[in-house]
Each structure stands twice: as C-alpha cells, then as structure tokens.
Amino acid sequence: MPYQGRVHFPRGREQVFDYLVDPHHRPEWQSSLRRVSAVVGEPGPGQTWVDETKPGLKPRMRTTGFDRPARWSESGTWRFVRADLTLVFEDEYGGAASYVDFEFRIHALGPLGALASRFSVPAVRADLRRAATILSSRA
Picture 1: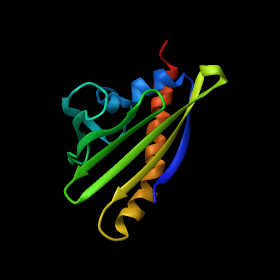
Picture 2: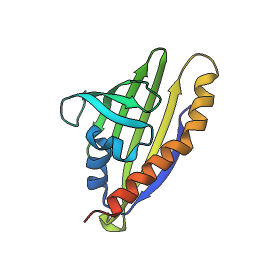
Picture 3: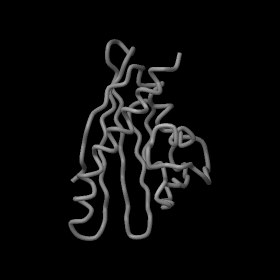
C-alpha cells in the first residue's frame, strides 16, 4: 500500500514539474542528499542517476513514468530495498499555483517496508514543502 500526501506550490504545474523531476535540483530540496551523481540522460523516461545520501547510501535511481506536466514516477534500489515515488501535478487558480500529490512506498522484506514507508511520509512532505519554498522565492 502506498502512502500519500499533498503539497501546495505557489507556481504552475509546468514549472513545478520541470523543477522536481530534474535530478540536478534534488540536493537543493531533498534533505537526505549530499549530491546526485552519474546522471545519464535528460529528464524523461529511463533517465538514471545515483542519489548520494548523507548517511552514505547510494541508491540507483530511474525515472519510471513521465507524462509532462501531469505525472512522474521514480524507483530507487539499494541492496534488497526498493523505494517508489509518484508525483501527480494539478493546476490551481487557472495555472498560477498547483498541487503535487505524492505516493511513496518502500518495498523491503516483511513488515519493515510498510513501517518504513509510513514513517517516511513526513520527510517526503517536508522535502516537497522545501521545494515549494525555493520556487516561491524565485522570480
């Protein structure tokens, strides 16, 4: 079962989509990242990269869904763990603002995956809120 949430962005969904799906921007707003490396391809289906996290993990990431500017998905793997994130973009106020709905799930052995997914939702929401703040400060 994926865990879900919604975050408001003060920009239209096309701008939000382009910002969030580009792995080069991820260290600006994703609190667990030191940097992104080994980026192969442009934002789009099949793009790959490595998230280099602050705890020292290096999950291999791949864009698994890309429907600009409506929906984007990624999957990351590290050892026996896989994490999937889907973002759905919806315009608000005639395109001046938008909502991003997210679904997040960690797949691991036994009940550990569901527990980790549930407790990761606040971090995913906080990261997306940080991205919203960054975008709101830009002209």
